[in-house]
Length: 322
Length: 300
Image 1: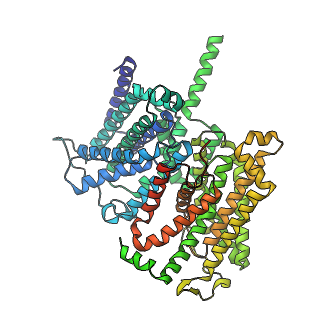
Image 2: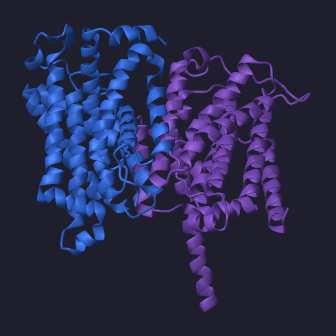
Image 3: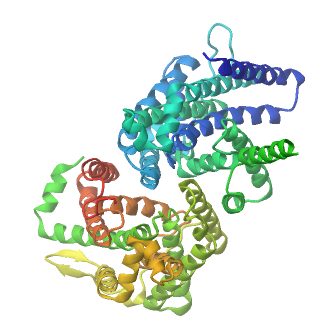
């Protein structure tokens, strides 16, 4: 573990401690629910950014793993007697396998082909969920609630505060692991493949394999995000793996910025807030969100963290010059 | 799975005729949408993820035009022209700005358009399912060919698509306009150096592709029910068609569309639950064995 990561680990633990202390200050349920949703969506968006920001592969079907994780987790909890961590592990394994199979076909393709093929596979997964009614409940989603069994002796997630702590811990730990992997030699190889695949190939790197590993990694973490969401809303719905979910994820990372690790989480938070406001003020959710997306995509053309970073750069440069 | 039913069908002439005609109408719709998609990709190098929304808009426009004018052919023309105009505006004001940008932004602009269009349709035409009903001109008894039933409207749809395919082939390969478009697809910089306005060629191709999708929507209106979001499934299917036929190849889109159309109609007898799976399997196989598609050129 290198020195830089130790600092980040410390930072992560401090954030974790602060978030853990939040319920003790007794803010409203709304705030805690917001953080839980942020944990689920933040992990999901960051996992997509492994592909988009670090791998240069713009996936438009990433929600298939979000939905896949949610359904696997929910079904394991409903149909078997396993504990929450085991069900979570099951979701990770399922999503990794799914990502492995789909990734083998997809990562060969360049840019826009990759985007569309991932989108197409996602629609296949979505239609499987819709048609396989006996297992998934079809378009009604996984009904009957997901049992919140206590595990490891005394951890009882049926208690709202414990549920909050559980989601926050899983969220922060997942982010730290992703950060660690992206700062490892593998992460830098992935960046090289993004910047110049030919050059990486000349250096003896198996480009296809690196991309595939990134795809599996991203799929697995999206599965964690989906599981957290399923646990929180106590159900899984076909919309989790619908293309709009992927679109939202792409928008989150674009809005937050793909060049900074924490960008997608900021984007996830912003979209969360936007969605709350939109749902409260208008019934035309798509129309309002579409206009916001257009403003960001055509007006700013980059994420908020990029914007702040640039501002910071110009300020420091001026100081150096003067 | 019901292979016996499929066997019984392919050994009976009437079933073959009925299923083939059903497959051909699906194929002609897919061809019209996929041809626009593949043409835009071939010339502009972008995939119009919002192409399905143009198809939807075409269907709804045809519905309204038919209710007003009471003439189906006229409403189909209005839908084609209207969607073409809409695409032109979309290209000029939005899509044009992201040609040079990363795929992420192209994706987002299309995503925004799909969201906005689905809601706009809800506002204008309502969220519930709508149907046009068979236009009076086509309410004739179906044709019986070898005892197979073929509705008159199917014949019209198939021949209209065939005519459009022929016109497209003629325009692209036999006219100066086609030459210009092919030149812009091949080497846009050189084309603009030669004094041709590539920006307007792009806009024109985009509008033409959109008009084809609008026409497809209008042709589908009498036989399909309409709802907001109806464009998305045809977008995925026409993408499969373009991958099978080869990205950027219009003739490939024709072959792919006919294959997928026939697979759908015969597959729905033999293995109704796996039709979609088979289409994806075909696409995956093509991508692994011949990524450029059946009729596509090797990537430069």
